[in-house]
Amino acid sequence: MSTLSPEQWRALAPYIDQVLEMDDLERAAWLSSISAQNPALAAQLASLVDEHNILAKAGFMEKKPTPLPGVAPGLAGQVIGPYSLISPIGQGGMGSVWLAERSDGRFERRVAVKFLNVALVGHGNEDRFKREGGILGRLSHPHIAELVDAGVSPNGIPYRRSSNVAR
Image 1: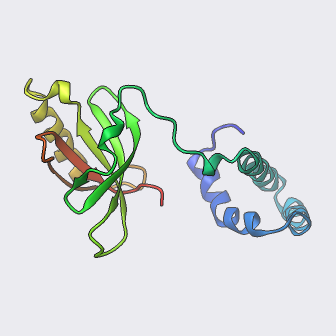
Image 2: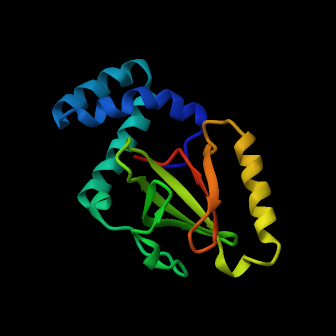
């Protein structure tokens, strides 16, 4: 399926969970009734269901994430404040991003923790990383991760935690 626009996602979102909960016979009848009113919407929903089924059969959600090149897997399990690092989820020029989970038992929450690349520490990049965090902290938009907090890890690497991580 081609990339959907925000408007298309808004139109599809109310139906996605509903259609995925149905069995094949229910789904076919339901999509047929939707198609009578809005053929384009029904076609997009059917396409999403097809993609979901292909990924489910391939065991997509059961597979462990593919290790990212250049990301140290040894950080998994490390505790940063009340969060434990689970797995790397991204890598870029400024650093790496890790999935982390609240581990102090107060409540459940997953966040993304971005670490400044260790090779950039001590070369003035901490200020840039801090400025980026300051900008991120002032932004409020549903498609931009919300800054939760920032600091320095026990081994001296600057980080910032952001919300909006898939649960």
